[in-house]
Length: 619
Image (cartoon, rainbow, N blue to C red; front, top):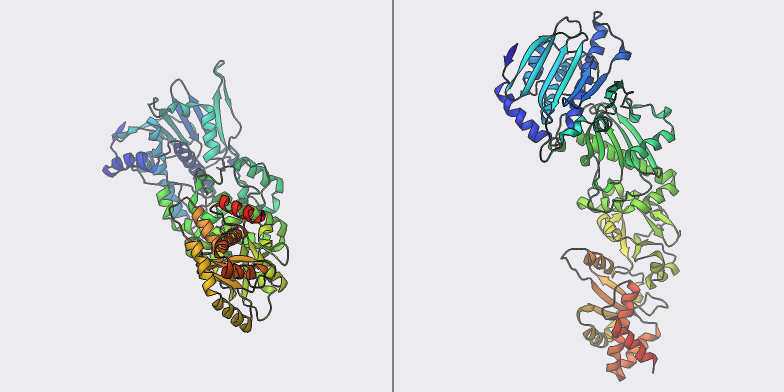
């Protein structure tokens, strides 16, 4: 028997790793299974050059057994095994990795899948066990050894008899504690669920010995793990039904996804990805509990259930998995955030998703419109998020309803129909398409054969403000002061008329106080009597959106009450100003409230409006 001490730094690392790196105790089983898979990989590879290592590849595998009475959980493999020196070297120094050293040496010759860093992952065993026993026999050797440790105090190595090569790790599971039920790891169902969760795609069969409690008869299960992940298979050989079944089982959605994105990359960073664009948002999509992210694997072993860093916020609806051999299995969430390879993968995935959305827009328009109806707000959010960093990537993916086409159009399609000298993209904001269609300014533009985009989402105007221009064409809200199709002669005539009516409008504005910045005549309303427009960068629609948000921020748009100079109401208010100023005050309030209703804004005192209307109706 040889009694040995861990190196000084290893004692400190053991406590640090158990309490800091692995906050989720169930991860220990993933680590031990991954180590067993490494050992099988090594044996398989070395047998290619060492003829003395005879083996049947069909018999390679991992076995797990539980002894509830003795509180033992055992993980066994028939892989390469370790000799006495390797036990001391690989298990005696935390973060000393036999697999890592093997991989570095191997990379120069061949590309073999070696999952982990053995030393670190192995010690996660002590999160659930107060004693760990490792029995191992090196392939091709006659000697076998047992490594025993109860933690930071050290370890013992003794010779033993062992028939087969490979490694057997026995965990003496801890007794239950106040906040931790260690009995879970002695339950067949729990252990099998952990295998499916973390190690389902290990390429060797993982079987389990189960014991009938009454008869004490031991039976071996079939392979618990799937072994070959769908994303590793040839895309040409995968049926649509297989994708749907995988999506349904993995993400619990009973509707077929709108789009399947199956991609892979090799080079500076290698990975396989299988992603889905859902037809419907998840039930908790609009709640604080919803978390974005793709499942992240390293060679088929789950690292993280939802890796948020793989998706930008505006693509938070995408579901799927990413599997990369270039990511270390033993990596914390904090380390992932700084991981260069992960950032490269995330950037490539984002580009791939956008490319697929573009293809859907170009070739499957109905499907894209269904997608946009559900997740279009996300794309719009991406345009103005982070000060418009992604606006050039996303501007051709947004669609709006067109007054001319009577359907959704892209900005590119709108611009393609513009006249040679046109430099303006017109838009109008409102709650619904029908309400916008009845706006006085819209009718005026329709008569001039101009196309108007209808913006019905609260984010829409912010998106166009962020874009500023599209192909050098400026965006103009037809309810803003910038909208004017009059000729210079018409502008001059109107200016003169407003100057003549200045005293009257000042009198009317005094009745409204700060509700409006100005009252004036307009020539752009045709048969409609009046409208509200806005001056400056803040429009009435933007005011409505910002003030509805659950924040302390409150803004006021500079509203202008415009009255149609050709409408009978213009002559009426002029007569009232000359002959009955008190009645004009009442008219002013009614006209302003009517204009607010047309614009979709609330009326501050609907009772007063109702009483005034009834007063005039009764005369």
